[in-house]
Each structure stands twice: as structure tokens, then as C-alpha cells.
Image (cartoon, rainbow, N blue to C red; front, side, top):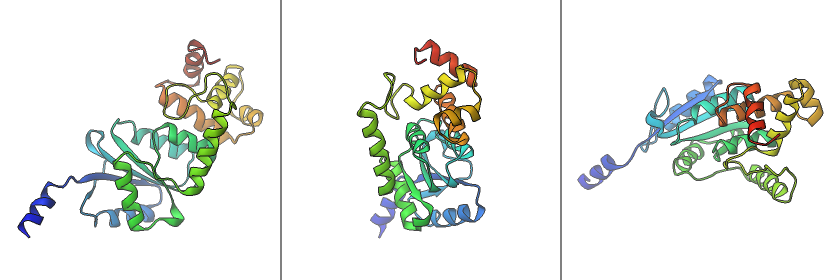
Length: 219
């Protein structure tokens, strides 16, 4: 028994922060995670960028993207997303931020959430089969030549084709609504794309993003 106690004391405890607009969902997640001896729930987020953040949302909109960008800006912070739904383009935005652990809210159990946190902490991926299929399909279309010469995979340096397309239209003077109509996207998706570019490349605004794209030869 004494030996077991010594092992428990030397086991690393993973700090976990839970964020979500739904107070009931957040309270439920916090309540369960606090019962896991290998996890330590913290209020303000993992210190020094170490640990895992859990973001609970109905859908991955601009608010969720802003929160995620802020939460994972520390290099060693991992993230788990618990969502009702997500569009393909938004999925690519998420993966481009280095997040590869996503759960559907309708399928989440306490044990499932615990395993996802442990998986994210190890730097591994955990996607629902349908999302994994959509991601593989998207990557396959890209590698098959559906893109521009500046194309790169999420997580690599460089802008994705859809980001270049949006910035090219911004440079032409189009607003968000006009770009959405032109590219057959929703306005929310256009805003998410621009936000992802400005966040990933540390740019101040749309004008700065266009200037960067011009300088780097994307447009």
C-alpha cells in the first residue's frame, strides 16, 4: 500500500481548463474531470502553456474560433473541442491551429471526455469517424491538384488556397457579403478564414493580411 501511495505522488497531474458558453455543460464536464486523479481542473487555464483546454460549443463559429486561437496560443497547450457540428472549412481551420481532438456533444460521456483529454495531452489525434473521413477527403482533393501553387497542408507554413482566394477578393475591394456570394461560402466562414489568417501570421487586420499576402507572393 505504501508503495502504491508513492507511485500516486510521483504521477504527473495534467492541468485542464474547461470553457463553454453553456453553464450546465461546463459544470457537468468540470464535475466529472475533478473525479479523475490524473487530472487537475484549473480556472484560468494551464500555466506556462502546459496542459489541456476543453472548449464546449454548439457549433464552431467566429466566437469559438476566437476563443480557440486565444486558448492554444501557448506552444505546449493542447485542446479538446466538444461540438454539435462543424463545417468542412471550419474543420480545416481547426486543424491548421494544431487541434486534432474533437468530440460530438451527443456522443460524449465522462469516460470518453477523460480519454480525449489524455489523448490530447500526448499530442495524438482523436476525431469521430465521419470527421476523419471528411478531413482525409479534403486532403486527398488538395493533393490531387485542386488548389493553387501556394497550397500547403494544415499545420505547415503557408496559406491555404481558400485563404488566398478570400484575400485576393479583399484586395479587389469586396466586403464580407460579396466574398461569400462569390465563393459560395457563408459570411461566417469568410470571417473565420480571415480571422485564422490574421491570427496565424500575427497580422493586425484585413489590410495588413492583404499586404502580407502581396509581399509573400500569394496574390
